[in-house]
Amino acid sequence: MTIEEIRARLEAIAGELRSINESAGDSDLTAEQTARWEELETEHGTRTEELRTAERAEKVRESRSRWGAIQVAPVKDTDTDVRRLDRGGLQSRAMRLVDSKETEQIFRDVDPQVLGFDFDGARAQEHISKLVRKNDRNFRGDAFARYLIASESDAYRSAFGKLMARGSNAVLTAEEGRAVELVEEMRAAMNITTDGQGGYGIPVIIDPTIILTGQGHPNDFLTGELARVESITNDEWKGVSSAGATSYWTTEGTTMTGGEPTLAQPTVTTKKLTTLVKYSFEVQGDYPAFAAEMAAVMGASHSETLVSGFTQGTGVTAQPTGIVTAVEANASTSKVMVTTDGALGAVDFYNVRDALPIRFRSNARWLMHTTVNSAIRQFGTVDPNFSVNITEEGASPLFGRPVNLNDYMDNAIGSGGVTSASDVTPAIFGDFRNFLIANRVGATVETMQHVIDTTTGNPTGQRATFMWARVGSGIINANAFRYLHQSA
Image (tube, rainbow, N blue to C red; front, side, top):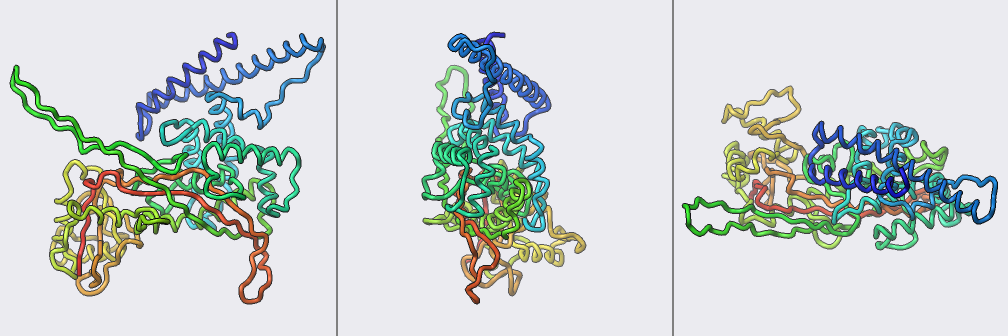
C-alpha cells in the first residue's frame, strides 16, 4: 500500500472504532463488538508501523537525493515527535506504553499495605486504555494520549525522580529538560496547569486522578457502584438530561399531540483537592519501585477525602456537592419523613422504597451508615420480613436491592436506633447512575525537601510532595432518589 492508502485505511479504522465506542456508550462492549474492536486495533497497530516505515523510507530517499548520501541513519522514534502524531499514531503509541511489561510491573508492585486496599492493576490498565480511545465534548482522548506518551518517556521518568528528590535544585540533562518542557506543554494543552504555577505533572501511570477511577477499592463511588464516573479534560462536565417524552393514544386522522421532552443541561463543576504526601528518602531507587511506592502513597492519601466529599460535601466554594447535600436540595420531591421522629422503624424503609418511581427501582441501591444497617437487622422482632442471619456481615440486599455501607452518612444511635439530633438523613435509595462524579485527569505536585519534626525541629528523614487535583460531583436527575429524613 502507498502512504496515502495506508493513511486512508487508518482513518477508516479510527472511524469504525469511534462508531463502536459511541454505539456502546457507557456499557461494556458485546462479544461481537469486542472481537471486532480487537481486530481493528491489531490492524491499526500494523498499519501505523507500516506508515512509519514508509514515511522514514520517503525521508531517506529525499535526504539521499538532496545530499547524495550512500548511507543514511534511520530516523529515531523519539519521544518529542508526539506533537506530530495523528490520532491513530497517538493511540497506537499510547497503547504500547499502557500494555508494556514495565507498566504491568509497576501496577504489580503497588503495596496494598500502604494503599489500604487491594489494587487491581489490570483494571487500571484497562481504564487508561479506554481514556486513550475516548473522545467527546468533555474529554479529549488525543490530548490525553499525548500527555501519557510525554509523561511516560524514559527522560521524563528520570527527570521526575530527580525533581521529587531535589525539587527545583535538581540538575537535569538536556534531554530530561526537554522532556519536562514537553510534559508542561501537553499539560497546558489539556488545561491542567491553570490552578497554579511551579508544580510538576505526575506521570500518568502513578497519577491518582487516573488510576483510582479504574480499579476496585473501598471507595464505592469511584468503582461506579454509587456514581457514574466521567473523566474530563476541562473544569466542568456538561451533559443533557430529560424526564422523558410523553406518548398519547391518537385516533386515525386526528392531529397528534406533541410529546416533546424538556431537555435540561446539567453541569458538574470540579473543585480543587489538595494533599500532602510524605515518603522516605529510600523510595528513590529504580523507576518501577519508585513509581509503585508513589502510586500507593498518593492513592492512599487521596481516596479517603474523596469518600467524605462525595457523601457530605457542601458544594460551596471549595467542596464538591455530596450525595446527601444534593438529595436534600430536592426535599419537596425526594424527602420521606420517618414515621416517628427520633426513632427508626421498619415501615420507614417500606415508605422510602415505595416512594421511588418504579422506573428507577431496577437499578437502585441503598446507601446508609453501618449503625443504620445494624438497626435494620433488629426489625425482625416486629416484622418477620426483616429477619437477618446474624452471621452475615449486614442486612443486604434490602427489598432485593444492594446495600452500600458508608460511615460518612448520618449515624443512627440512641433511642429507637436513630439519633435525636435534627436534620438527619439515615438512608438514601435511588439509581446512583444519576449521581455523577466529574474527575479532571492530571494532578500536579510540588516538592518539600525535608519534613521537619514539630517537637524537635529536626528532619524526619522524609520528603513530601504537595499535590493538587480537581474533582466534582452532583446529581443530574434528582427524581432518581428518595431519602429518609427526620427533623428533630
